[in-house]
Structures are given as structure tokens and as C-alpha cells.
Image (spheres, rainbow, N blue to C red):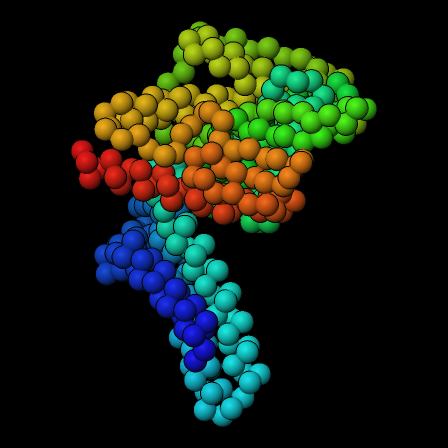
Length: 373
């Protein structure tokens, strides 16, 4: 076996060992048996909410174990093929197996990252809100570029993207947009994207071709299900309805279907404008619950940070990434130090490396704090 191929085999083996430890394999087998037994209990659905939670947990555990088995099989089968090809001096078989191992390695690395998604809300869908900063048309155009970037990322992962609220820019781009991203671990993957994103480029809107710096903010919150209790006093809410144009200004609603909810104690304002008034009201309430939950989690994170002797490398709600298009090409994450010159790929949705680095650093920070505590 070639040294390069042996290195790939070793890397896959290390990923599998780590996945097996995180799954705690023997315990996972026992848990799956317990879930199966509960699923066969006819009284399970007497409590539908709890039943759904149990079935979701069972499916997630089953999927994780199946994924491990598939990776292990992919490794063993292709190693055997290479050995067979070498015995029979069949270069085509060897080349095919080596190419398959490269794919297995990529899948194992992704699985290793996803194994880090163990937070309470990581498995949930996500709301992502993008707002242009000061700077008029420049910032609105940058917000639209970010919108496309996250939409492309979600589509590549097979996630479903729904527009909840849209406000176009006066000349170009968007002032704000809110999406709901639906898919396994959507929030877990996207949560570290919250913060300010900075763009440096030669402005296409400047006749003098000067370099401009633009800012847009991104906020990612989990879509809270009914099992999470968030207390909201109806008297604290101000609910307004208004007319709004559709995405891109292609049509104008003739009724006051858009809904804006203001939560007085927190000052939070949420809007939904792309559905019927009844649907918009329900969506806006879900968004408010999500934002309130995120605020509470932020308070807990801040309190935990205050007790730590060493701050985590992953920050929230501040400038997190710079995108430079001219005079050189670079995207750099300011928290992890990860950078690339492939700006086109990143803006086309190739974000897994940045999300993975931020996730790994966050988990590392928590582990370090736990060991010091």
C-alpha cells in the first residue's frame, strides 16, 4: 500500500476511534434497545410531545450508529480491495479503492465534526436574520451577498430554506432578511455564524472605483419546539399589522398581512411578512420565543465566562469574519485564525471549514473551562 494511502487509512481509523468513544458504543447499543422497547409500548403516544421527543432521540442515535457502521465498512472493504488488487496486480481496482477511501475520509471528518453537536438545541432548525449595517447601498449589497452565501450553503447540505421576512434596499441589495433553515443540526452548524461580517472591496457602485468597507450583522437562533417553555406575558406584547412588498419587490400585498411584534421588557422586535396574516403571527411568535431563549442562553454563557480564568476563543455577537476581495483575496475568521484565498468558494457557500473550526474551538474552550473549574 502506498504511503499516501496508508496515511488516509490511518486518519480514517483515528476518526472512527474518536466517533466510537463519543458514541460510547456499548452504552449506545443499550440505549437503542431501550428506545426500541419504549417505541413498542402502546401507551407511549398517550403523551404525544414526549413521544415525539423520544422518537427523535431514537432516530438520531440510530442514524449516528448506522453512519459509524457505514464508515467502518467503507474503510475495511476498500482496504481489502487494495490488498486484492495488489495480489492480482490490478491497477484499476487499486485506483478505484484509493479514490473511494478519499471519499470515506471526507465523510469521516464531517461525521467527527457533527459528533460535536451535542448541545441542547444543536439538533433544531434555525432562524437566521441578516441586517445591513451603516453604509447605504454598499451594506445592502453586502447583506444580499451574505444571504446568497448562506442559502447556497444550506442548499448544498440538502436543507430547506424558507423566507420569513424580507426588506429590500432602496437601490440594490437588501436591508434585512430572515430565513428559517430546516435540516438536521441546522442550528448546531450555524450558531457560530452570529456576529458582524466585514467586507473590503472596490465598490461596484463607486464611479471612482474606490475601496469600501461594509458591515452586516448575522443572528442565528434555534427554532424552539413546544417542549421548551418560554413565558411570555400577552400584556407585554404590541402587535402591529402592515402591508409589505414581496421578496424582490415583485408584488405588493393588498391587505395588511405582515405582522410586527414588539416585546416591551426586552425591546425585541420581530417581523414576518411572507405568508398570510395568521401564519405571519404564528411565525413571529416562534421567532420571538427563539430570540428570548437565545437571550437567556447568552446570559448563561456570559455568566459562565465571568467565572472562567481563561476566556473561550469563540465569541458571540461581535465582528467574527473579514472578507477581502480587493486588492487581494482573503476570508479570515477572527476567532479561530482560519483563512483562505478562495473567496469565490466561500461566498458560494463553502462554509463547512469555518463552521467546523469555530465549533471545534467552542467545544475545546468548554472542555478547558470544565477541567479548570
